[in-house]
Every structure is written in C-alpha cells, then in structure tokens.
Length: 66
Image (cartoon, rainbow, N blue to C red; front, side, top):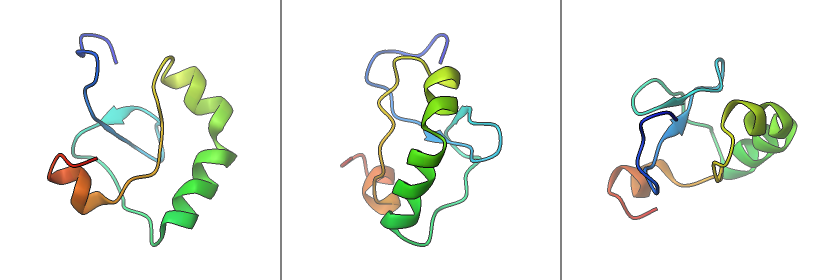
C-alpha cells in the first residue's frame, strides 16, 4: 500500500482486494480463508505487489499477535 511502512499489517477487502484496516468480512473458517486466497492469488499479487498475504485468526490479529 503506498505510504505504508514495511511490516504494517492490513486486512484485505474481499471485493476490492485493497488493503484495509476496518472494511472486512471475516471468514467462517481458516480453510475457507485459505481457499479464497488460493482462488484469488493472481489478483492479490497484482493488487498487492510484494505483500505477504496469509490467513490469520482475527482475534490474534487485532491483538497484534499475528
């Protein structure tokens, strides 16, 4: 994301594939999230070049543990 520092954490909006800190819909399971990531891998790489997109638990992400 332009203007972001290295190592910043963001969620990905499922519809726009843009980085976001508050516009998101959590997945029902980690498996569903991983399947979505794999299905959209090419578009994610194009929309978020250089980003490390991975599935994490929302509660741990909000606490800064992931």
